[in-house]
Image 1: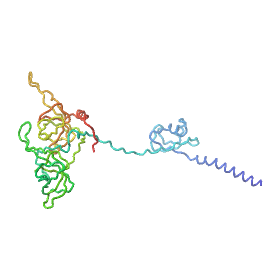
Image 2: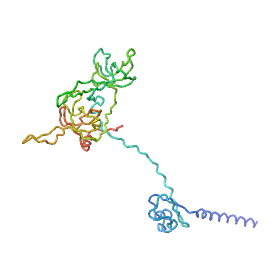
Image 3: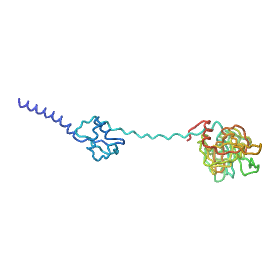
Image 4: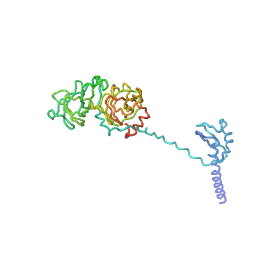
Length: 351
């Protein structure tokens, strides 16, 4: 009986001794710290021991450190042996990288100033239409939105049901507003937008079509071009080059230009004119007494380029202090002033 009691005592004492010694064995293994950007030995001692003044001893434990105040990220610091360690802070969690969507580019919305699909175009060369209107279902009367018309596509031009085309009415040769001489330009006034419905089986290239949008009446002989979508949301762009020129034509052959007028320039993409550029509309200013002296031009409005083609461009008068005549002078606006002029227009996200 006494032997059993002694054995029990020895077992309990052994278990107690093992439990008290094992942590010491486990703790005897040196702890380490991986340096992150900005760490110093002083900071590490505060973190692990709550005592910054232990840093000289820590430096002795890590003789590879050349400057205790400038540690290299990634270095492994061996911590002090035999010094109680505070509860180690958890390893910082890696912040997930959030890829922010790029901010939307904001443009100006001109949809309340003009119908952008009816903007028209100026041509200084021979534009080749894709076809022409050859008839309708109204016995020769002018067709309008919703009506059926027939189109003859040019040889080599093909289409599919659902394809969209713009109907244009071509003007005669224009006279330059200043020289009054014909200068080889014409305007294309957009009349409607049509959709191919089905081919007429007994004649190649003839299509039955429906006018899905109408801007003015459509008549036999009107030209048709493949529809090119154009957005009323325009991204303003600073001018790439200084341009000084004249308005040479006005939509619908109007002679007076005011706010919201659509006008055409004989300069386009090839000459550095870009969609989103802004021009000053000015009139020359001269003193006549006591002698003729050129004075700074008078600013009367601003012109926003809404479409730029290889040799011509179309613009919208976004503000005007007074009406001017066809042939008015336009000059590139300083970008700072252009932005101020555009602030009055509604904004829109550019796709």
